[in-house]
Image 1 (tube, rainbow over the protein chains, first blue to last red):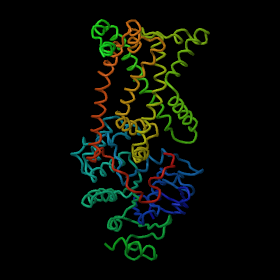
Image 2: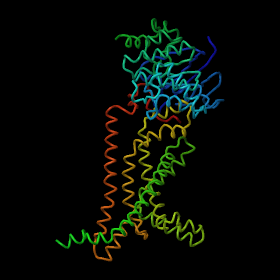
Image 3: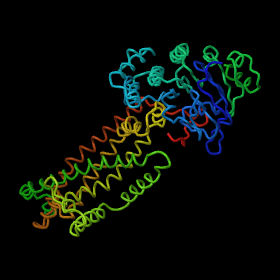
Image 4: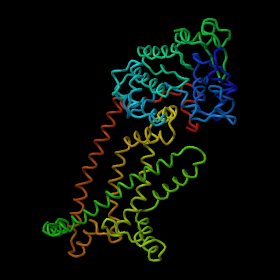
Length: 248
Length: 266
């Protein structure tokens, strides 16, 4: 296994009476793409949100680049995590009062203290890379969902993250817009970015994933090589889920 | 019948007293604008204090909520008496400097500044609630996106949440400003010769209400256009929403457990 980038051990999270994560262990090597699949409510999104501490886990340990980042033994704080972990959301969450370049520049300036020119140059380069060189000055309301999501990816990349988290980033898109976003993610994976991808796109998981993790009821039911998990699942629950997903 | 008309619409009296009433209205306008601007700023500060995150800052949140509840819940006139009485008594007693107890900044009388202070205190509380509604109307994903990029709570509020919130609440803030403008008439009770006090003085000198009617007309010259502006802004916002604009997608129904849940110390 490649050098360890991200390691989770015994992750627990509950919201009131609802136990959303019930002991999740996961290892992600540098440059690996881990695709997390599973039914609604299985805890996939919460797992991602715990990794960048949007939701602090109740129990368990997370190592990022070998350093503990949560709980009492944490040696690094939220700032360390957020600067290294980029996140892309299902609902894009672009800042509607800022245009594309400003969306990508804002945190560069406030968090990384980059100058306006430098932040803008970087923003323009990243927007070019996600195929939006002609949309630099457009506001989110004038962009399609796929374009908005690509701006959101550029916005996260602008912080030079070492890990990228994708939370069902194509689920809110019209079908014809899914590919343009997946293409960008595929390129990113090819360039060696470490990625944890919560997705319902089984084709993407099979093709790009180094590892597929099937979650249900807050636990990892099955994980391994994408072909093994997706084509020849061992667990009954995985079979049932994949049967339902691939049926149509 | 003729008496009724003459009592309210004695045009020659209106003409004679026009300049005097206009002077009063000028003071009303100055009171409104100075207090309005200060209340806008103070209200935003209160609203932001109320949204401070985390357990250690809870006392500040409680104090802010208490302040807002108190000053929304008591009459402005009462606040006016408390402020003016305290400041003048405290400077007479020597516990605060005379310049502060009997302020005459920028050539305005102390009663003017007592009015500004009381109006700011009270309307700051009202406007804080308006801002709060705006802040809460910004989708939660905005704060999450900003925080996930490494921005602090303060940076996220300043650059992401507040600019969006303020845009949403400009119409209700203007409504509050109209209400504030009308309430400046209470400062007349302290002896500030604003437009209502002027009209009342004329009324008692001439046993005729026309100067008050003239004052009312001056109010309407400002308040009716403002009300129309509010209508236009609201209808513009609504057409934006119906076009699906704003770029803020509606949050999807909670797909995975945990989405839509609050509780994380963002």
